Length: 200
Image 1 (spheres, one colour):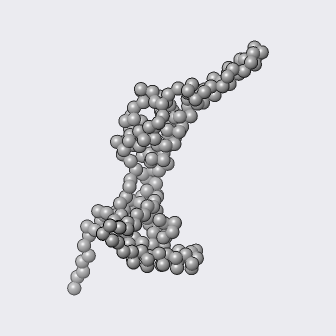
Image 2: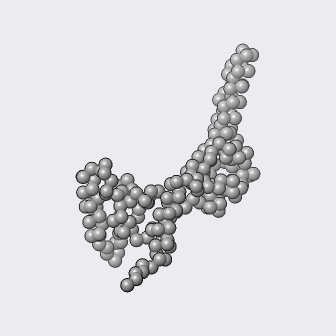
Image 3: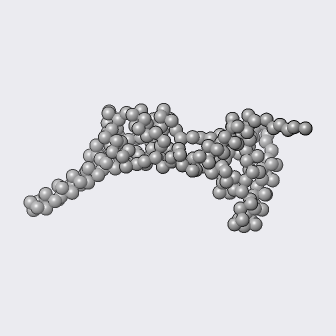
């Protein structure tokens, strides 16, 4: 949502874009619902601090979706690997525990890296067999089929873990800004807890 409804005071923004935002928000305020037809405005961003204040006011519920914890990482891995051939030694909970700080996208990259390992083994085997056949003057052996690829095992995931790191750090500037914004504007944030007061 930040790509379309960012801050209007941005000096580099074109006047037409500001007019479009104003028109969008005017029509947003005018949305009407019926008993059988409801209108739900759902917005997602990883840069809420770039949103226009008027947009923030029009989104009364603001929920931060943080990085997945270990049980949720295990569930994400099960979804990603649902159609893959896995060895009995693959332990989703063990992979989840060694991927602390990984996002869903990071877990997908980890699984892709793990899946490359059995394919790489077959390619190396074919290369050696072709070289041996050529040296002996024999015809090249037939290429391997997809059914020849072995199932993914735990070693594949441990090897992939050494090469695929988490893309987000809890100490990064962006993460700090997100947590600060959530504390101010998010549901259950400090702004809701602090009452305004004045002295006469």
